[in-house]
Length: 134
Image (cartoon, rainbow, N blue to C red):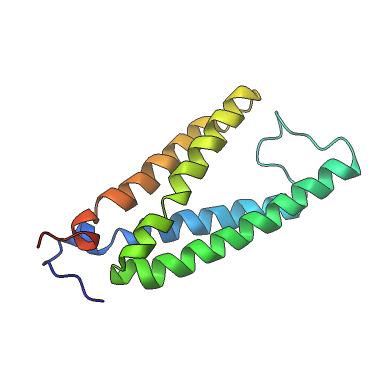
């Protein structure tokens, strides 16, 4: 489905922001899988069960990162309306992660805020492509 409006450069390329966020999430997931927590001050693994859950979280994050990059490079780039709704998962997830990390005393919550703002920009900048005026 082709957009019905002449898109500006930032509207046409907002999908790149989601792809970059997916790549960053994939890097963090590899750290979790390797047993290196993303916030050592908060979450040092003290036993094998915590390490196991950290690795499981890394595998889940890797799956979400790959799925997010695939969606952003295909349907989101084309401007398909359904994907605009689906990708709201990312800023909502990052809001939850920010609040949870802050409440647990973690140091990464400012980073999550930055990622959340980037994901919101990726959703709001191309709004005209997904919802053109009739």
